[in-house]
Image (cartoon, rainbow, N blue to C red; front, side, top):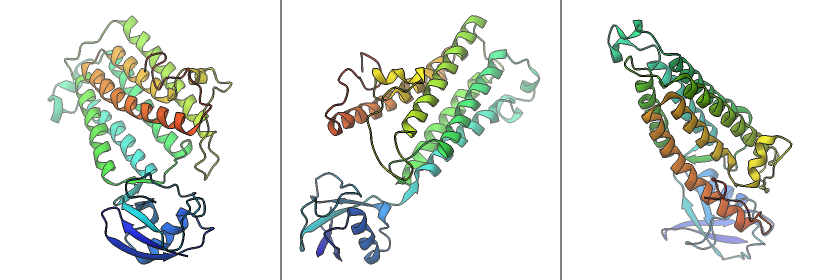
Length: 300
């Protein structure tokens, strides 16, 4: 059968020949044959210009498409792999923070490097480095992405955010005039940071095991034998809960206002993501646990 492809702006792109047994992914491949700049990852296919984006796995028969039917294509723009974006996002803050750590004379003055460091300055540098090294390793060996790519502009936006905050936080914590908090506050913050980092890793491993390699399968996440995953009983996105907890603990440990601002900015964005994922879970699964909130147990 033949389908007419129209852009969501109303421009006719062309016609493609497909079989009823084909999927949306097959349609994307056919469109790519007639429009070489529209590679499959750049396409969003809809049966209605204002409707939802169809899944690659959706069959044409299930969508009730017939010969002569119109489908609508939205150009998502140039794309880049999720893994590439994540690696750039996370490698940047790791190295940016460590630029300020030795107190270079160009930034702090010639005598800065000779002044004594508080113990918490070394601890903060270690915590920051461990966090972003963990993120890089998770990107390489743990995460399984439901989408292969994202818009390339996200790379510049995300890197500006992460790298900029890394410089902001690091500049003040490594400054020669930085005043350290008391030891009890430092080690309490360090303990909480370590707890939340382990929790975050545990959730990522649990989510990874829900999706078989090479698939986009979605299942309801439940606690495993790992006690850190018990938070699934109360929230849909405990990885974000632990992430915010890590940065709040870091801010308290270092007694750093820039770090706290970073925590609030990141927490606000993660709350938005969590609310969206929570809504999607409830729409997709009729038996989704009703007692769960999105990111903060009993609250949000």
